[in-house]
Amino acid sequence: MALAAGMTGCKHPAAPVTNIPGGGGPPAPAPTAQTTTRTPTPGPGTGETVPAQPLPTGQPIPLDNKEYTPLFEGPHNEDREKFKADTIYFDFDSSAVKAGEEAKLQEVANYFKDNPRMEGLIIEGNCDERGTEKYNLSLGERRALAAREYLANLGVKPERLKTVTYGAARPADPGHDEAAWKKNRRDEFILVTPK
Image (cartoon, rainbow, N blue to C red):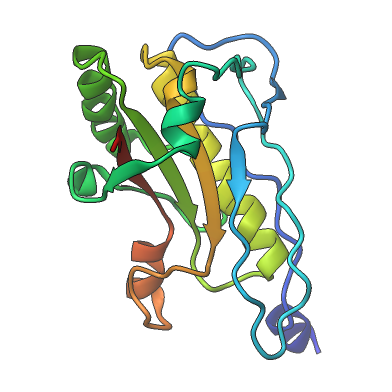
């Protein structure tokens, strides 16, 4: 009976908070006005998609995005190759940026600090297939927000960063084992430039 209970699923514990360079103070809810939840078309047996909830992390990030709104909302190019090598990966059920992934975020931050042109970054949060659709959308959002906050604390203007969550809808590897799941628990970075 205990084995059966363990196999039917579990409640997910609260995700650990990412330690942000230069951060401090008590956690505060992060704003989500710039976060987009892209809802996949529900398939057979899936429930209704519910927008993700905000991530309680470090200091709030200002959301005055007037300068970059036309870039993200108007005609633009998306370069998925520029930061492909900087994709960061997460532990199971976690949105904490791992120490081994910090150098990748530093590379991305350096690019934006060295290039003040009208360019932006879309941070796409993704999950493996385990968990409900609602939970995975929320976890994907927390992962994208963790990277956004980390980059902002490294000196990237927050208004140049937009987050999107796909939950488990866009697996990098379609497999159903730990090797595939490790590749799917990730944030991808897309360079946005005006057309």
